Length: 198
Image 1 (cartoon, helix red, strand yellow):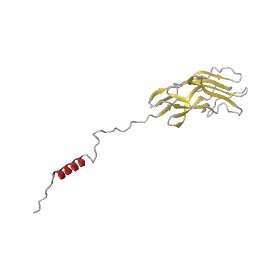
Image 2: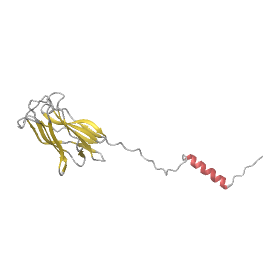
Image 3: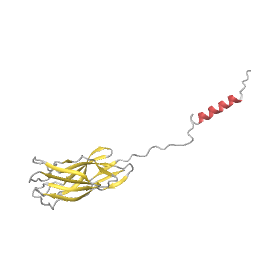
Image 4: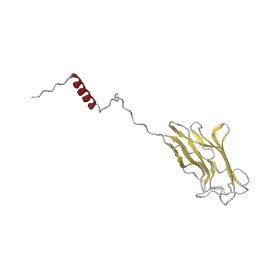
């Protein structure tokens, strides 16, 4: 009968293999890394515009951090002689930013042809205030009708890395005017668009 002698070195090796096999072959110190949390999403929500009210509405999502915002008048409008608008879009500059050069005139004032004059830029020293002026060239006016209610579109982006709750951009210093440059009292702004990063 053969008898196998196992020395101390062999026994140590066997013990090491047994320990390694029971621990999965690696030693991570017992630390469990949790899965990453959900990534915040830049969200936009709005409501329909009632006739003769001007509101901000969600347009197209341009990227994960940028939305196109439409300035819209509820149609049909009572006035048939709308020549232009002047207003400021006010928002929190610590959380949101206007994308320079992104403003474009909508279809409302381009009805019937002719030139639409507009300017849109943040106020010097106040990055949270987008100052807008948009008018139809000449002494002519239009009516807001179905599918032709967009006054202006621009892009706004999230500046925050962390989540933030609902933000309500507002329309300030608002004025609608007719072809005689008289204020149209029946057209008023309503703030109802909500942006958040959640």
